[in-house]
Length: 481
Image (cartoon, rainbow, N blue to C red; front, top):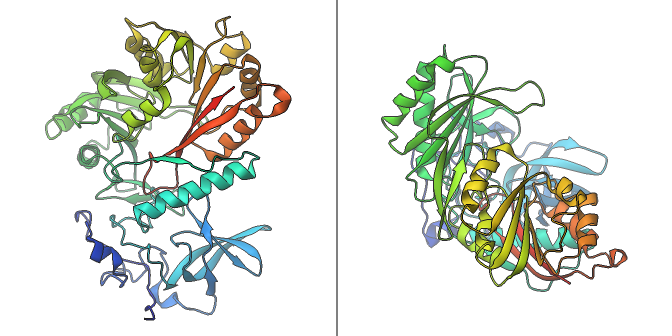
């Protein structure tokens, strides 16, 4: 039976609860009756409804997902990047950017929808820039990410194993940390999909409910204190059980004297609040600086059987449902005399490695993580080196070869010098935890390059879906000599 064209759209009233669909609901591809905004614009494209199907529209067939959240189509052989589409769909699109090698487009109408298309849970999807895949069934999202990971590795000269394992869990309410900005009226929200403007939110179904509830409450209090506490951003971090919360408020200018007023006012509706840090915006290119503190500076986060101390601003894995499985994938079935954990953070992996190694050296340079890292390794065989991974390796590490090296770098990856030094050290086993497939491919290519003589081979690749509904993906690669 021929399918009717589907216009992308749908909006719930502000404050409405997230949608929960049955299998029958997911299969139904009819447009929602409230597809138009009050101003007559389409919710996902932002285009006037009257513009759909205009002469400027082009009909394309969507081919495949690409890293970054868009999907690939072609016009006269030229690549066109189309967000909010799905592979196999026919869509009318409007070109919004035309570069030499590719073009960018916005969907005006889905003419032939995919059977994998579902109704987004969130009324802000499409306008908000936080999620890219809510319109796809979760199994399809995992498939897209496997395809992207494999293709990215192979494009970088890395032959991926036939089987890429997948770690996945509950795809909703998983985030233990969010960061909200404020619009001109003081409403909290995320950056928009197509600009740096703030899209106000009434809900966020990928975040722990405590975070959203606290963010909205904090915004109301900040509006009342606006003359004395001009906040530009607020960060919220909670433990997996949502029993403890840390809040960071970034302000432009002063307002230090009103921190206690804000914290006490927030603690009334949010008894889980443990501490609030006030930070002043840094000058261009500089990070915000702490200027005042209320309550605790850290919370305890239960993960993999350990209570980790996590301080304000310190890095910790964001998916509260998958932390234990991630730790097990990195640290299980390894043992020896000496392990190095580079980019250690607060010691998520180092603390576990201390159970199976005679000695563990945790290397970290971020000031926000050092004190917590030392606390979390207290009473174990672990020791802390306050240095960047590069400086540590340049100095020859500990002077003795490790049995295992774990690396968990930021999105920029390891880089040429670090990979060269790791190849020279040639530990028998190396585990690489990556949050960017492109830099992972670059670094792996260097590590397995026969010219270095390390003879590293890829033993296992695991896609850890720490960021459901988004294009982001985590990868764990186990290398052996």
